[in-house]
Length: 348
Image (cartoon, rainbow, N blue to C red; front, side, top):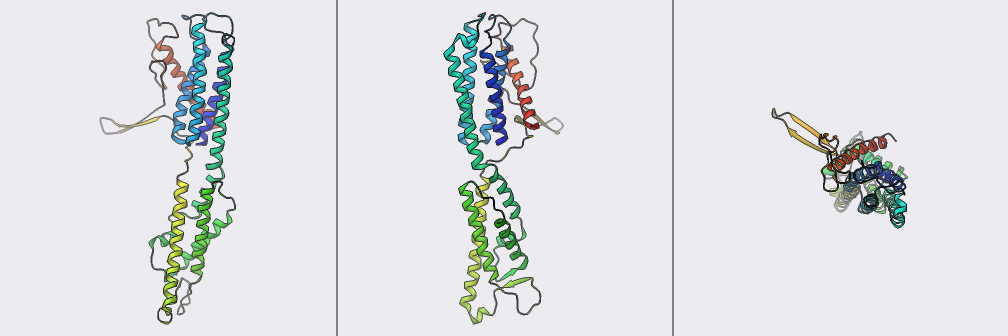
């Protein structure tokens, strides 16, 4: 998630620069002239930003999504304001920012404020669910894997009148591993559940320590609740078995709660995964074919082709501001820009 937010933040920073350059550029020479480069650059950047927002919406927390949507709307409004100035004042020798000083100041402040709000939202999310917490989750999973032999033994819920030595050793090792890890969760809920598991392991280790090696064996392959207690002190015998069972259930319950809480945290995306869509189809000979397509979005009622250059036409087109070819070209530029941003994000 953090990598997606970083990519989105860089894209908005680049768009802020493009908007600034466009504000100090002159309007289009005429409505029939070729499209201004500043218009194409900003519009392509907005289309790419919209696609990145869709990816972010699948991964981020609600407050981060809200801030990202607010940032997109601020940039989209600034781009629309610039477009309208081009339409209203073609051939003017001044600058866009001079044609409407209030619009320039308003949209510049709005974009800057939205950038700051998005940065704060991502920062709060990183503190609560990323960094040390993510590393701590990994270490806990390594210390107590679900398929560990001693965990499998506990999950079988066999009567604990005998405790294999390897099971009690596994509990001791897990208890020691968790206590050795001094980096605490920053999320208070996870910290509490982690402490509950440590306490449960402590109690189970104490209960295992209250069992004894068999008197008639020289090996230490297991310990047991002395079977003679069943006749000499049955109350102590059954109370010991119940205490062992309660301690085991407490460990399993605490472990389940912690693992469920950790698994509910937003996963980190694969930085090499594609933001596009994937389609699996079957050819006529039943051979599988996988097709990957990047996102594309059209603007102003036109169509868009992602990742492909539109076919050229022999018939002359209309003015740049009404031409479907222009908006199709903008979408193609957006796709290329998205690929370049993703590439640089990977190598940084």
